[in-house]
Length: 415
Image (cartoon, rainbow, N blue to C red; front, side):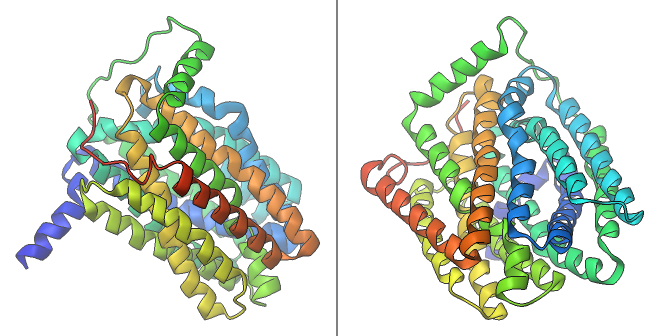
């Protein structure tokens, strides 16, 4: 029992901080609602259009605003109180979800409504994501930063494990409007959590220089830091060729597995359960020194699992492989986040994390658009096979020619 208690204490170490507890449980409710909407939104669009290409358009609309605003969002996250910025963006997201709910309840919703609202949601996320990434260090001490980052992924994937399945069932029984309404209301949980936090005053960057100059400084820092620019490149590649799998789930459920909205939800949840397991394991690792090697190994395993998944036509086997895909995907993104956040200077944290999140969210719509169009022409399975082969080739090259990640020795957070 003593060993189990110590293991649990290590896994959930960051929850001893009151502000982080508020954040954790508020976000858990909010992200649960977000995944309900994401699952219902994609299936509703496919149900209206019967087009895999439209799923690509949805992913593109959701992420194209990243190209326009997220780098600037990272600058803003270094200039104004991050809690204030997050409260504003979360409120905007709540309003957009409620608009989609009203349109759906009134039977007025059209594909262009969904795409425009997805684009506006992307704008809000462009300012929200860098602030959320940088905000972690305001809720916990440096010795808990790695654990807090891992627990952020745990809460995200706890919601991912349950939200899509709940969204699929709710969609079938009551309709998509209720998924959107519940998501809108769920944002209140994180907004109230932020309101009740006691955050010490953090000195923000004065407006002495232009945003362009601030961005140039952060790009120069990344360019001259091999570990960081290699990891950001890896995240960009998997965002283009790996994450498009999720966008294809509605089409995969219907065209490949011959299922319905329930099948779509279970595909999402299987991946989410695997990601949750991966996040919990990473949270329990503490400050082990070989996190870089784990990241490099995970990047090679992921495309092999993706290739296996592309040939499976049995639902239960698909769910099983998706569990391991989610597990591996979480290893890649979570370890990448930890290694970057523990390697950057605090005064550059918002801007560097803005570039990191820009890479993650910005390249994703490119991949979803291209993969959706390829799937429309030659089929969903062929599109995933192509992506898997590209991913494996790129990550094998990095393993051989760019050993900085797999040879990196992890140490405690820098000040």
